[in-house]
Length: 153
Image (cartoon, rainbow, N blue to C red; front, side):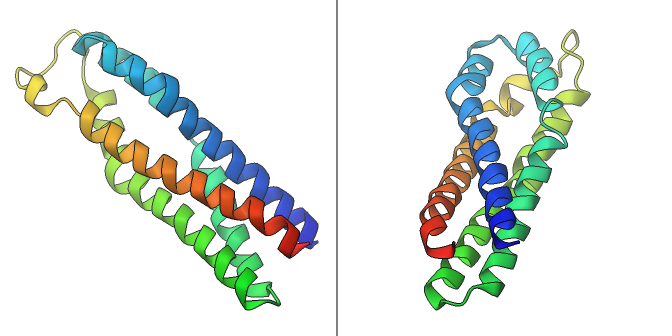
């Protein structure tokens, strides 16, 4: 059973980290390069493609790491699994409080009729900053989880 949980955590964490890195390396630079109307259209398209996939991956990782941490026989393994769970919980918190509200706002906009103050409210920089933070947290959790394989199994 332990091997199954470890495998699920690695799979889910790896998928989440991969999506976030892909967004960081390709999606975000593309969106940043677009004029506002095309940005709104493209962002609305991209932001709907990762639900519920990303939340499920992050939830599996967090719950799996919590379970592995609580069941660990070694204090070191326990602390590291719980640290990985906290890193993913940080990603979830940032997603829910920073990125998701921006995604909802952008999806509600009409690309052909943007607000006059869109240039001042353009969320790309803010969204990108928080996306970098959650990417770093998720990749760090993956590094911790990969390092734990030898200690856990």
